[in-house]
Image (cartoon, rainbow, N blue to C red; front, side, top):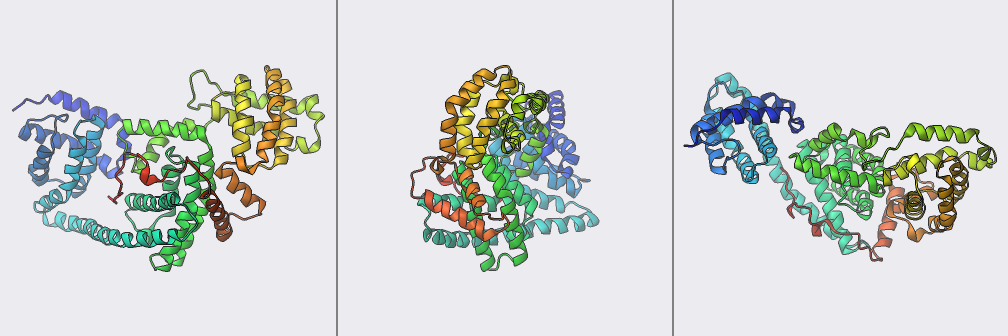
Length: 491
């Protein structure tokens, strides 16, 4: 039997306990993490002669169901934390056969808990049984829910066939409903009638809005797809009117943000990079709460002007921009503007500052002709949801504002060359992206976003229109390679 180096085990455990991946565990799991890993490593070394980098599925099963589960003085809260702690630990170590080990841990969880129950004191047994029964009850309810869900989805597929949506968009709508359902159950361990609206909002933002895998056209489909789903659940009695209203209000509230995220290519690109870093750190991308915790710890700089994550050499300086704006308010060029232009000065210059920063990573002192050309030709006309008159004022304002900047002559030349294209395309509905199209239609109709029926009608009309056009960026989820199984299952 191979001798295990205890010092190496200690070093691995210490590194794990200091790592940020630990934060993805619950408070109870973190409390017992060090003890669980130490105990498991010790028994694995003594009984199987393996260190933590060479566990096998067979060895893990023998240790789990052997004296690890039956030794005295194991608290039940310790036992229920074993599987997530060891799974997280093995992910952190990056072991080659992690997938098999994780499956073995999950498969033998219930047997290990039963072995533990048989070796507890009477008082410990009584407390543990109650919690164990709750888990068993949920698993039974989950099985029943999965049977009902299949019927629901068959019904919804038939309903969608009677709409004007293309086959691809019908599939995409079902996949949206499927993904939201699975992630809500995995996150909250509850079914639709008990879904928490904060978790629902988090799932929509993290799994769709900030996920670069989903094109704008798919994000535009989220609200109509889920409205149809919730209305169906209300009709068949799976949602009461109060819960139905709560979910709809949350959906209506978050939908504009989802559409804005879809149009924000820089932000989505940055989060795409972050998702890659999360996977490298061992974060389960199906665990929305763990994703959010990791992003809270690592991505605060995505949302600040002072310390953004940008390409090397980019130094956007909010203070410098503000100083230039204040100087402009005192300049002769500002005084020569018409009142209607003056009223929009702060809005237009702020918009340009932010868009160049988020699209190119450049601060005001680094603005160049290429940056401005991109904004004027490729970004503002297609994504900025403003009326044509706004862009007319913007041209006048920017021509005057650029006069203050060190490279103002270059910027003014680019503005003069591209202003006709900006004004033409900004007024041409055929060039608008989904987010701008829907936003402009809602605004033009004077619709209140809380008016569910009116908003729904605008979105339905838009979706019906795009089904008649060839949109190569509309890829049904079921045909994407997302490194996930075709059939998603609740955990």
